[in-house]
Image (cartoon, rainbow, N blue to C red; front, top):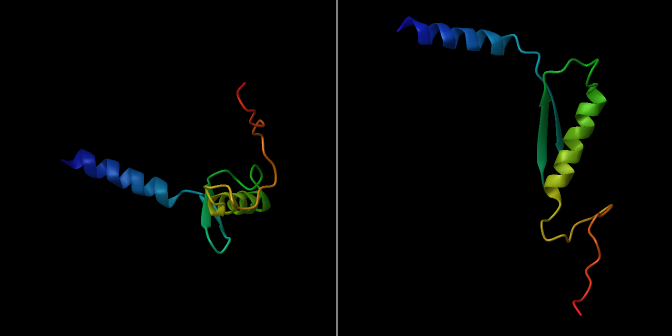
Length: 81
């Protein structure tokens, strides 16, 4: 029975040594948290914050399409002949 305890202890030790970084953004209608274990040299703090803001903005856009839309890739609908 000691094996599961050793595995649990190893997992906790790795989690404690984690270099996880996170950024949070709040749009008033949605909140997003983005995390990474990449070092700041690969993912700068500004980029992490930008990703959090984009995620919160996407989450706060209504599904019915009535919210603000900056661009669209949808093809125009044509009536059948």
